[in-house]
Length: 139
Image (cartoon, rainbow, N blue to C red; front, top):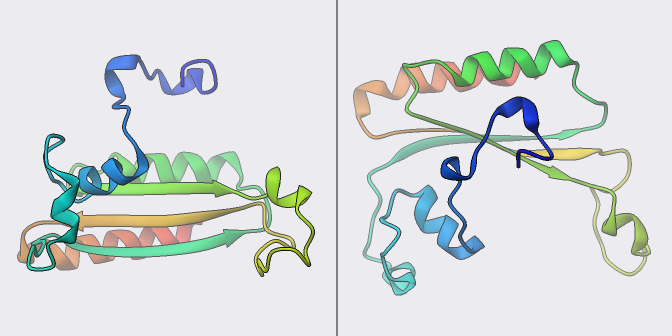
């Protein structure tokens, strides 16, 4: 991470290496030592509230927009903000359009998969929903 994104100042202690399926448990707040079998338990209900939005990006975002997003993610009144970028191109560009149906390939640079905000207390709902709506208008 430091080699690719030195400006973030990320060090090894900031990271947790895990498989994709382990990350599902992590994102939903389960302890790292929890068995993956709990995913098969349909009676296990999460008490986490969340809102997710996504976007396809056709033009690079201006640096000022990225700075505004970063500032909003620093808001201390927001419990669990997250944002995931999924790049298009690369391998997808090497696969024939007639081989794999993928309607989002034309003109999209990447997908912001989640503008996610989660909270655990019901009274926080309006504050978190307002936050994600404001974030969405920035991008």
